[in-house]
Length: 388
Image (cartoon, rainbow, N blue to C red; front, top):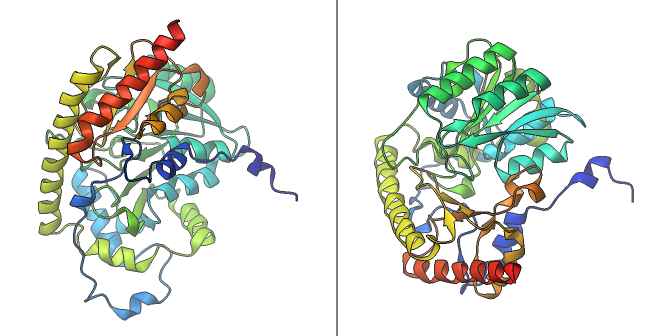
């Protein structure tokens, strides 16, 4: 059977495989970026118009596009509803952007580490993934300038607010500097902000896309982390030069995003009940973050270093005695604990051992301490074996 040459680059998603293995009820999972089920809002369907069962506009429901544009303008992103495209989760934005820009060998620039599923899509289309290392407040600016000067990538993909997996939040200075560099070198920005609303200290900063003066941009977000992931409703907002191309790619992919999910999102976006829900969500996750931090101090203080996340859903641990954390998975699962190895978040995983991404939002707090205790034991056992 003759498949396209692209299929030879298709990798299965390790996180999906781990989540499948973690389905057993006895497994204590820190693996996925799953919202807490206790905080999924109760939704009403009774008033949904029957007309939503019909085909819709490829751009998305007009009222939802208006609401999303208003939200973006409030953040400082100058845009109109005509620049908003409702997509099937922000994951689809990455797929559309890859189709727009990437041929085999196209150079693109990413943070190291970066979002696993973005890497999967970009590599599927044949991108040559260049990286810039992350510091505590954003990318290393010296290396970013060097990469832009030497390579002129087709685009740069950034997650500036509670980055997945590292939880880094760019400082104001770094946001301004990144925007200035992209304008200087004429490089397109893809800015991914799924965790922006999950801030625990009230901090909010204008998107980098809103600071650009010349470069093209795509800004993408989702309701998956604040409402229901199962709705599969996300959005992209693009500079006017890019929007028509993205719209055509959307039409060829799936005609339009599901209208039922769009209607449900519209019942919340911009409303008072949505603001109330976000306040409750932040309080809930802040408490889970604090409980997780305390348990980490108990079980991992001698094993790893980490920063306390100010938002998002993850802790990013760096082992003091590095090893390939992928080798720990089977033992961890045998001990009924699941986690996400750090290596797959880098384009060259074998060169970046010694990190773990741990999700704090989903696990039952009553099982948290036991789960981290078991995971720490797995790490200790592997390090002792390696040292022997």
